[in-house]
Image 1 (cartoon, helix red, strand yellow):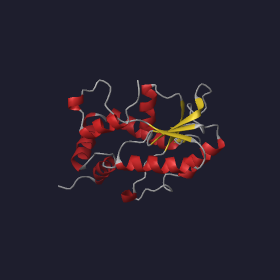
Image 2 (cartoon, one colour):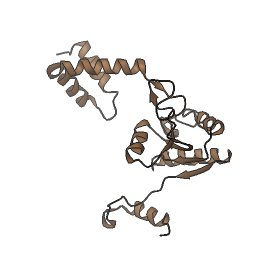
Image 3 (spheres, rainbow, N blue to C red):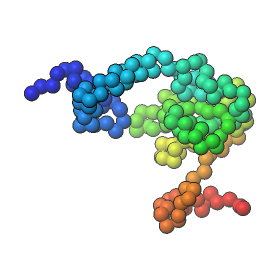
Image 4 (cartoon, rainbow, N blue to C red):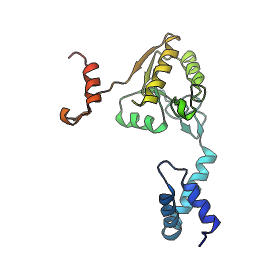
Length: 198
């Protein structure tokens, strides 16, 4: 039996979400249609409103409803330090950790030649312009410790050194509360390599 085309379209639409395959998308679609009409309508309205209202902040490139987001326009933030992260969710994690009181720049990705993403696709000239025109004295690179994240950090570091800006990289190592016997050898080796005096 052939599914109704509207149902096929819903299932196919749900597949655009990361980690959602055909079966998961089908389960979600049936759940929304069968058990949660209110949730489905709320989801549709929220998606529509988000697409209509949200834009990129002209300063940090994260999502906002205004031209400049609340973090960038806050006088309480340290405007001399700029933390570069890959995605908006990374910015949220930094804020939850309360470990950075400066400003941010969100790349919206990372350099990944295999995926066709290079410096041009990340609009790194906007980051360089922001550093050049602002009062930034230090850029903290907080990209992920993946091959792509490391390549991105290296590229940005080299680019910003030409601007005469101090560039630092977040450290790697043993997690807080972690026991050495449970830490992988790469993490342990990096922790020893990046050791500091006490």
